[in-house]
Image 1: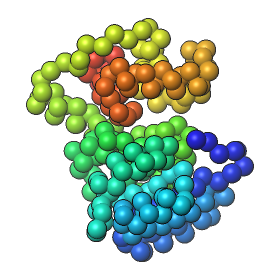
Image 2: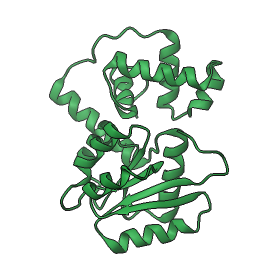
Image 3: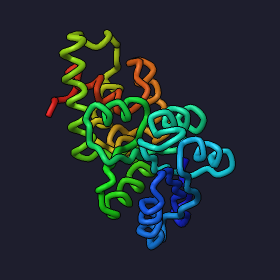
Image 4: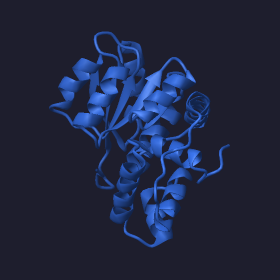
Length: 223
């Protein structure tokens, strides 16, 4: 799902704090490549809006009345799989961030993030599916270490081809689909197909899950 180069990225925000919503909208309104198309006070209101408006990226607060971000995220991913979701929160709890990334979030920002970081996150998730920062990286690795202690088990035996391993490593290295396609000399569409096949083979549902699988399987070095 990509717009033409001259078309703005359509963004929606769901947050129960009017002042915060207004602040984000104001900071993004000066960006010519961003278009705010919808705002909601809770997840239920957002899902109703999504029936009529299809944004490219949703900024989703975790704590909201009636229907919070935790409940809303999987619904968005199920009904609108192409919509990218950036989770917002006042907190930086590693377990929460790890859970959000595992169930489909494309990034996670604290509400203290500056307008420049929010803008950069929107651009990155739109163009490259994910925006990883120190917070998300530490949370994923922290979650992985906790799981290792609790489960103390290796990942399921999966037979990956050399090409699949190469592409998985490049994905973990935060290369975009186009960059990977150029490196392995395949079309971006083929790379996306291999990415989907990797998810099926490894039993993961998101890029975060694939990163965790790659670390568990020893395919990449753990920081």
